[in-house]
Length: 451
Image (cartoon, rainbow, N blue to C red; front, side, top):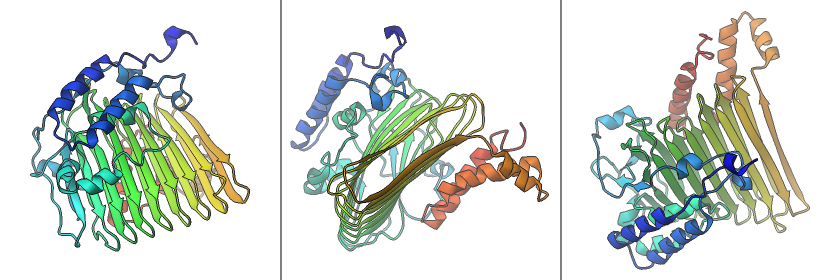
């Protein structure tokens, strides 16, 4: 590969330094945060944007992001959004608290928070710097692991707001908390840096729904970072739905610290954005952890959806299961890199990882790399990947029972997506997500029987 054909993402960072210097003077934050922000911009300046020469990015070219003009959206604006307009977005009818962020800024007028048990805190991270500074200082930027990429560093330098959820020991948040991030700027390079901090202490329970949507089409950029701290015996379900503009760019880092005997299940559903990537790092840092990561990505046209994860087993008697399915059409591309890392002390580990891909077009491609890295002796670890088109034998089986060809294809594609959707525990969320995915699949001529 010649220099001219390589990813040219490692461009100068001077413009980012200049923006940071202005931002640093204007933002009002506690004094302890400034060294963290400074370390973030310094790290970004040191490494620059990743290129195709970086092993972890060799299938995902982020040069289109690096070439965008850097226009962080520092000003608060509701755009044209109204409470009525929010009803057009997914999960609007689900009962629960809702935090709405417009172009990265919390909107109190559009948000609604249900009464909560004593000690539970649900609100804006920017507000928490004033009201709960000690808790935030203890955890913010303290749980960034192996996925500390240039994008995470950029977020650390420039984030303005995001969600803050704190559930004290023994408390249960009965209804889900929905974090709704709405982009309203179609300007090329308009950038938001949402930062979420979620803490569920010992024996607590919490369900979080996170969705990224837009009211416009345009090449804007969402660069999100989330830190979750799950305490001993806590049970947390997290579902992320990325449904950005088809011209947009979406990079996200999800960092999870898991305590003894906790139960964490996460679902990542991606249907939007021209280029999207989820960097997931989970640290099974104590014994008895149960960690399940599910994912579904639907791509078409020239979309690229990348899922990159590290599941780190640091202590014994922990289980982790990862199930990711992709349905790809047209000239779209999927990338899956899953790494299970078993440390020497992590005896009795039980880890499974599966990536399955259904290609609806001869031009669709997938690069998949499930990976095991094991330094312990007494473990049970498996991984695998499949790539294929609709199975002729399965179609024949259905047709032999009187089912038409197009209906047989529909059933198989829906069932393939349903393998992931059915794993969502919270029933109202599972039912609505199933309807959303059904509708998206029906828009495909092949699934709808028109091709």
